[in-house]
Length: 316
Image 1: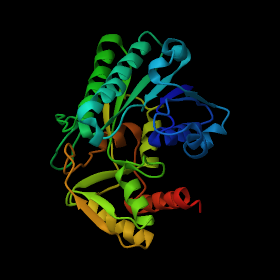
Image 2: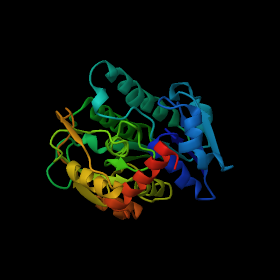
Image 3: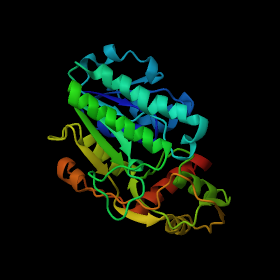
């Protein structure tokens, strides 16, 4: 089976490639424009293991330049992870980049899938499409994004549904809830907290820290994602991918202090616009359709990320 993964060099995409390659029947083509990091950093950290596998091919190119018609001729599955992430930078002039990468490129890729023998087009979305919610949220909740980023991801979802209903592109939509773990982007909260803690720098905390999140360890996330490859009865479905437990941000910092053996110096600044106060995924559909069971506790996952960050920061 031939599988394309866009955003293959990124935080989640690189883990997904590794997980897919564990199946000897899968051939993986990873595509990434390497917008954020240099190729050597990617080779030595994110994709080091995948590059040693003869069933892995890497294409370094902007997705707008890829010859999709040719590439998709004999592809079975497309995992579309590529895009511009993050709420904070989606306001103002940068919104144009979000529109291009999260909407325009998605439409171009869907268009290229029309008439092909693609078995599944898996679009990676986000809990940001829900906005503020009360209690556990299921996939049939009315989306109400609070940020331009969330709007672009919801638009990407709608494009998928349009191409499924009108052109027969067999889409599956996964909504990720706050994924964390080794290889996180440097702008993501846990990466930032751990780096600042290990380097004895003040931890920057937006708001009062009482915001709560459904945290999903990256290996749990990609296990669920890879399960879509062989899953039955998932075409046209939207599926939440959440974690093993929830926590407030301030409680995460307390746990990091315990695990790292350091006391945090917290620098509090105003809250971020566009961020929901709470997230909580109902994962019943993922359990039913994908056999998904998140296994890594928050404390276990944070320890794994700390260990990775120690190696990354101190080469030890």
